[in-house]
Length: 358
Ligand code: IPM
Ligand code: MG
Image 1 (cartoon, rainbow, N blue to C red):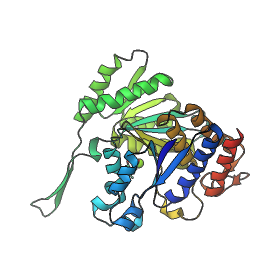
Image 2: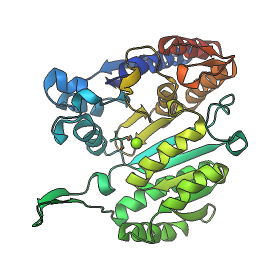
Image 3: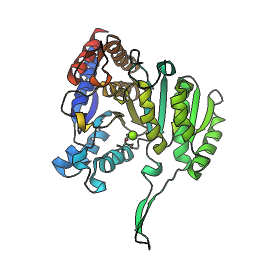
Image 4: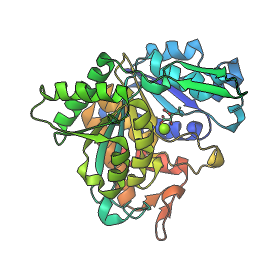
């Protein structure tokens, strides 16, 4: 019996999360596991209901669960709230920090059949499969922030960027372990030609590299990396980088997979892991049964793999996603002439049915 905390959140979050639950239920029936789903509030929905985007009850539920499945948070309705009550700064960043989720894994896999969905040339994309490991609880996101008035009548704003050896070591070790299980190549991304925190980052990686002689280590500046991801993405297997660079590079890398609607993520390192699609709450298409649930379903596969150690089950979910795409089913974000376009709920049903049939 596994306890799963379910936090649908805002926008399309409430539409895509139920689709991942269908897949987990299908896995439960097929393999004889019982999943107990308990729902809690987060984001704008929580603010509207109880006046805070991250209620204590939600954190308590997460802490007493085996894994957390999150949809998406935020939307224009809450953009003008004071910053500590906004869904991003008031809920998403604190939940990462509170649950000590320092390692964020984002998988950029090009599924067969989606080669044409990307705006990039297909010969560059064939077989792209990149794991980006983003440090998630440090750096600019969590450094001191301040504003002061200046004598010229303007203002001065400051965001502090700090990394400690310990913070760098734990994420980089994590990345080396991951690289060992893949193709044994690790690319560490920094801006060591400019930033002191990046110089410490690079020195720390260089020291750790000696402990992993079986893994090839490459160092790359973040500006070069953003160019190389588009120029020749196949050179990458595992990328490790700090919080802000990881945020930017993963949005870029999502385009290698055809749609940001295909990018799952796992945030782990603490006592309980949190799984969410890498895209946001997409208010423009919310409530229209148009959103692509596959990133959330693939996040559920990561949940099975990393929090419940159910590797075989995780693979079945991924296989089912591959199969529906191969059979030419698409959500509107991936629609092309000749493909069969399904709504969010219908795509969720089809993946769950396929899981049962595999
Ligand atoms: C992400 C998102 C968040 C981030 C935002 C919503 C705060 O862009 O998970 O990548 O910047 O980390
Ligand atoms: Mg982002």
